[in-house]
Length: 85
Image (cartoon, rainbow, N blue to C red; front, side, top):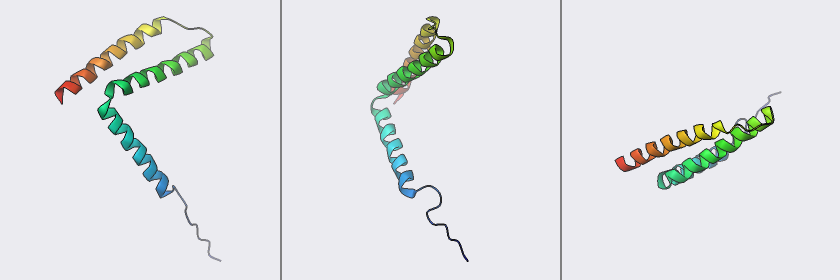
């Protein structure tokens, strides 16, 4: 009795779909780097505040200044890279 496993492993079509999504994201990032950065900052802030609230049942305002400084540094880096091109 011979057992043959067909379609074992990831589906090739799903791999191509993931590559297409990544390619669309890369194109969007090239056109709008500041929008991508702002979206990532907002999502990271929401996740950070949610975790902090769930763990400590409190919101520490000093974390806001850290995010603000890191965001300004990221904007300056994007601006520098954008002007080099």
